[in-house]
Image (tube, rainbow, N blue to C red):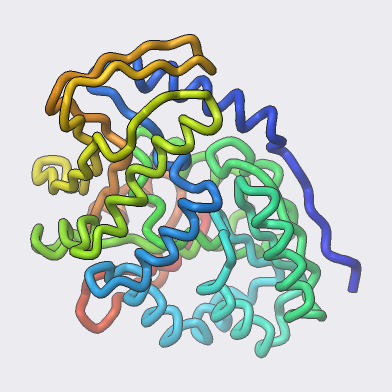
Length: 324
């Protein structure tokens, strides 16, 4: 088996330029906003791992429950030779799929994609050692920009997009992402999608506003990223974490609310931002889905849903769709 490889489409200069563009656009708008991808420096990734272990945060456990129960069925239905994971991180949950596909004897290549070169390089080395008969080819890239760089054509690819990350995209962004993904796949290839479902608001809000305050610290971490990378002078502790359910749009919103007036200087983008007391900055939306709506969105992009599973409590869905 060839040595593992790492293909880089995002270098530090690309990431820095993207951060500057997002900050200029987002902090000049009304309301002010930042994309959630900037949470995930080393500290942010560590905090998110802690979030997944919190009693209030059900999505990770619910999705793992589904994958544990149905990984063998997924392997049998897809017969995938190439498994692609978008936003892979450490690929811990994906090991359930890797194990099932390896047992079946079909898997030849694993392609994890992530924006962090350092984290992906570590994951690639570990996975290559743990799965010596699988060629591990990491792709450092943004799944909203670099889907066309994913290798492994030939009708036997399975693309895994797990964790409910699809919900972080606005409806128009979701539609574009799914269309581009479908265009990169051959007819008959597969998408395995994890999606959080609409449920009672108390459960949803608690998952994003835990009693221990870990999510609040995770939310404020984006300000520390801006301080470090752009020389900003945010005082993170002067911003309160806010999570609320938007019933009309059926998504959770995370905000940072200024607890007092603040003038923030951001030399890296030559910007000065004034926050009034109580003014909010949106840092994340997390859409929740209904089965019919998700089927419609996938169908519009050229995917047909072949299987649909949920955890026992019906909180989280994992669906298997095929490019048609």
